[in-house]
Image 1 (cartoon, rainbow, N blue to C red):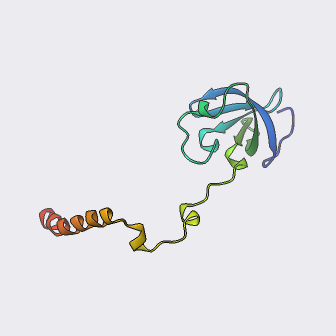
Image 2 (cartoon, rainbow, N blue to C red; image 1 turned 90 degrees about the vertical axis):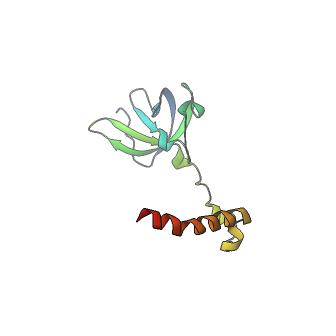
Image 3 (cartoon, one colour; image 1 turned 120 degrees about the horizontal axis):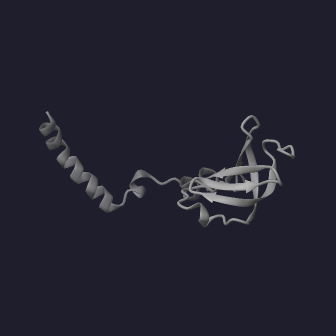
Length: 122
């Protein structure tokens, strides 16, 4: 590692390779790190190439440095605001408000069948 980096640094790098598990990013001429697929963004990432292309210049945050193995773990997700939780977006609803009528009917049918299932399992 030519340049000294620290955990927590935010740096600009260039995507040099894409694999199913993440993207390799060159931080300088001799230092490269990996943005693991789980560190690309919040939520599910099906395909790394939906987010990065080889040659893209991206900002990354350094999560970990393993000097012994010369590996640097990077993240773009760490630079994003986390999504708000559903309950924060919507004021708390009562159970009656959260369960629509069709759901309630479905639960009622399960309740009716439950005793029969219990008897059959014994």
